[in-house]
Length: 97
Image (tube, rainbow, N blue to C red):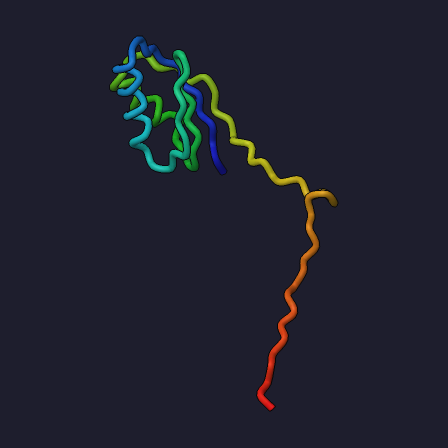
């Protein structure tokens, strides 16, 4: 099951932002990473949020773990409009006479 982890840290310029993103992407199981003003959102399978925060603290300084939630998986809604009938092709074979 995928997790969504939101971390708050101070990223004052592009160099610090790139450094933080580089640290985050080293972990295995990361599906996506996005960085807003002072927050980094990480989505992935089997992410250890405490290990992630500790790794960022060593490189960046102060890091606050804001939120850890399971990622909602969108299931396609099956309606009569979305469903198409299953049509199997009819094969005709020609045999030599």
